[in-house]
Image (cartoon, rainbow, N blue to C red; front, side, top):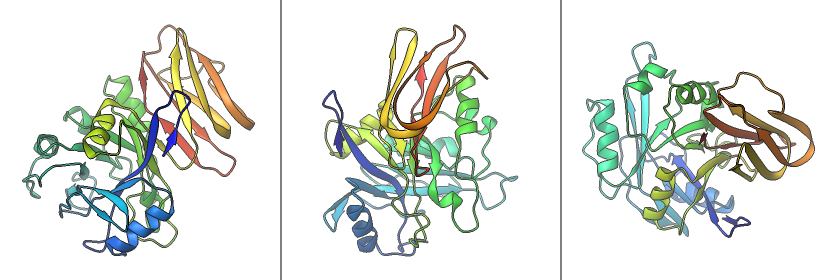
Length: 289
C-alpha cells in the first residue's frame, strides 16, 4: 500500500492468480508467500471452475475468486474467460452457462466480474457489445506473454471500445501459472479503497478507483481543458484518446514525473500510459470527457 498526496490509500492487489488446486504449479501456501514477499496487500486466488472463499494464507489476505473459461481453445469458435472476485458465495455457473448469465451471477453474488485477457482470447468489439455488467477489464495479463503465449496487451481493444462508448475500469494482472520467473508478482492493480475489507475493494473496482501497474506510481486528473499526469520517475508519459494524433500527447525523457495535455474539442475520453527506465508500465483507467 502507498498513500497519495491527498491521503488516499492505494492497495497493491493481484486479482487473477492460480495455484496447483487446478492448473497452477505451486500450492496456495507457496503462492501466498511469493506475493506477500513482493509487497502485495492481497490476492484473489482464481482457480478454474473452483471457487475459493475469502481467507488468510501465510499472513496474506486472500479474496474469494474463480475463473470461468468459456469456450475451448479455438478463438474462431469463441473463447472468453471471465474472472469473478469477491463473491460472498459460489455462483451457480457451469460450462454451459451463457456469458451474460455468468457475469450476472458473479455480480449477484456480490462480486466483481473481470473481462480477462481479451487480446489473448482474440475477443472482439462485437463480443463486448453483446454483454453488459463487467466490473473491469485487463489491459495487461502477464502469463499471456509467457512460454507459448504472445498477446498480453489489450489496449487496442479497450480504445476501440471506448470509441463506441463502452468503458470499463482498467486493471493489470499476472494470471500466474508457472512461477518460474515469467509470470508471478509482475503485473497488478492499485486499488484506492477505504480499507482492505473485501466490500471496500469490490466497491472501489466497480467505481473505477483503480489502475494497472508493473511498478510505476501514477495519478491523473482533469483541470478544465487539461489532463494532468503525475507519476514516479519514468521515461515515457503518453496520453491516449479518440484523437488519432495531436501535439503534446507523448513525452519522452529521463526522470519524467509530470506532464499535461491540452484536450481537443472533439475528444470524448483519455487515458494515460507511463513506462519507467526498466520498461515497466502503468496504465490509468479512462477519464470520460
